[in-house]
Image (cartoon, rainbow, N blue to C red):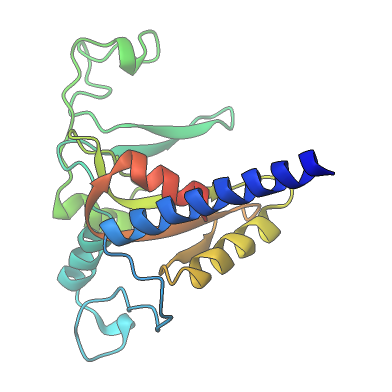
Length: 206
């Protein structure tokens, strides 16, 4: 009996230490948790319905939320065999005499010239011309947002539990259904760049 009590106390102490560490992590990055309050609206400060935003305002909102590397971005592709994925946008892609695809993979190409993230690229993404992604990890190993993917058979329950944990910690989070309809993505946006390791710990804690 004594050993069981000792083990229980030890586990309790470990949980308390972990709880204190997580609270310190939240406080360090100015993420409130002690008092619940309505989550801030992640929209531009314009007094009109979202559908009336101008293209420039929509682009500004996109840049405000999805802050990552601007010197490079991935674009979605689909193959005739049903495959799909994302690859860095390249200025020389499919250029005769320069691009060696599909014989040479992009990762092995010495002629690659990455394209930067511009307002036109974002506009075309929002207009449905193409689908782009973003590289959130900056060169100094920091990031401005955390994206969590739920794609297992229990994705609905997992996503709801994740949001509930965020709500209990008063962390604003946004949830969306994935492209396939068989999964979800949860987004947490930071007001300033945070170490990527801390962002991962926050995701694991919630």
